Image (cartoon, rainbow, N blue to C red):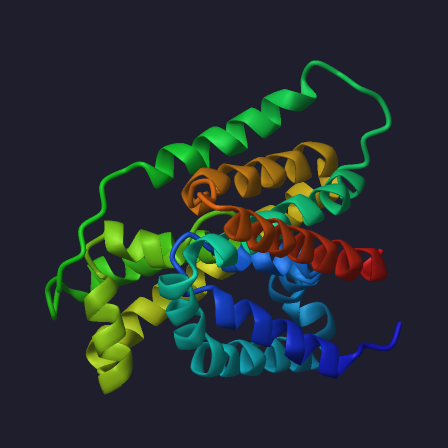
Length: 267
């Protein structure tokens, strides 16, 4: 099947633009947009079709980088000015993606075991989100081994839906230092961190690809649990006036409808 390279770039743009918003997972957005499976396969089985996978990942990465540059700050601004409306949009996106993930889970019969995977995934992300976070500058040179290990942990958050990378960096007391190092292009900090992230992504995607192939039902239900587990952190509270209710309900429907439409086209 011929790839739509422009669509891949645009989906990377969407993922990159939202992944730095606190509480929003880049993996979840990739799942909503129907590109998550392809990303996992392209990384895990890269050498099976090197040219095609390299082009796919390059276009997605270029889109992601452009998205972070173009949309991350405007989204953070909107999140400060209109937190209810924007967060209800993301909640709608979660709801709109649920039918797609249930379809991928290939549920042919109902069993009492099925909700267990949902609960495990939901609980893991919910517990992660209530752990205390520290927003401090952190050590400038904590050591290469520490940075590689931190990159391994960050890679899991990048790959798994429902886990916010920005929140994870805050928890590890690294958020400010990472942002400052990126802005200054401070290679002694970024290179070992990047090496850990790359190694972690390769290892995590290989495990996920194998799980998706051999145990699709359990894996996708667990992933759905991860995504649903991000809802408590996303939930901004209820509107307090009729105009707010109307705006939030419209935003909820817009998010759900857009993601449902996109995911149905990928089916």
